[in-house]
Length: 386
Image 1 (cartoon, rainbow, N blue to C red):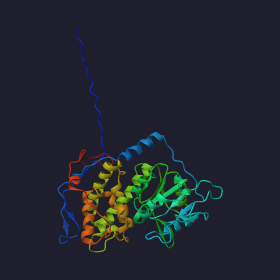
Image 2 (cartoon, rainbow, N blue to C red):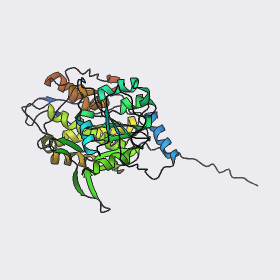
Image 3 (spheres, rainbow, N blue to C red):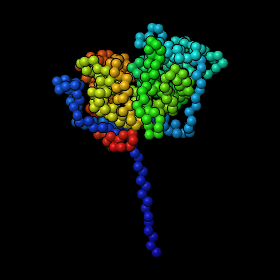
Image 4 (tube, rainbow, N blue to C red):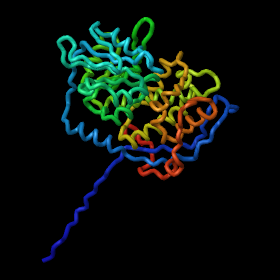
């Protein structure tokens, strides 16, 4: 009798949705051939790796089993405003939150203690409106009453004043599902009050309106901030932390790329000008940076992000000059320090245009920037098309 031994090959296929785009064009810094040009390398071969913390966050989210978002009502809140002596701080956001509230909020400075309760509420949101450069010191030295209400702290990001504070929050353990974070770049504070600056860009296949530039919130108190904003005619998306994080990084791309590309011109340039005349430069950088986010942070941008950002710039940027804020370098530009094309622009901005005068810009070593990629190269988009 003969026996046939059947061997079964188990094929384990791990697909890493991360790419490194190759750029072979010359980097142009002007509208005509007579303007300065900086040659870029023939290809971008940047090593990409995954952040273990990002993977762990996703595993914890799956383990939580949450399917529905719990929303709490708006009510009396504490608003932490910058101290009057703050160098770059402003009470503008704190004042706006008070204006949009119901007249029962309490405003304190970072060195003051929190009340045990507000009215009949023992639990309430604590809105931290400090500028990014003051946030780390605050988290390290905040009074005990703040530490006892860790999950009630609400952080703000977005725009040229609040930027991207994920690095600060992660270092202190505040970037997680339960923590409330708000993207506030969808509203603007004007003399007549707070106005919504998001735009409708079309209709989705499911019949719902498509929007760009909205405010967004996640975490324990997302319902409270949503109701406060919508009561004042300001749109606010709500979702889980991972969904919110995509919106936040999308806004970071907008604030950094469009302003940088426009600020290096020798003539005044608006955000709308960048969208209309420098779309190719912007597009190259956006895809390079989105690939970096996939590889380094396990974060894939939501499909259509490039279209949304370009339409937002065209619709809302006609009267907005491109601006680079020196002290915001760590919160808008430094996170993309390993993106080669973007770093070339940043270096040029400092060396030739006098921008970022106090920023310490560290160019990654050639061994890091030019080593072969650890993953399959290509332009894998959010919809899976290469």
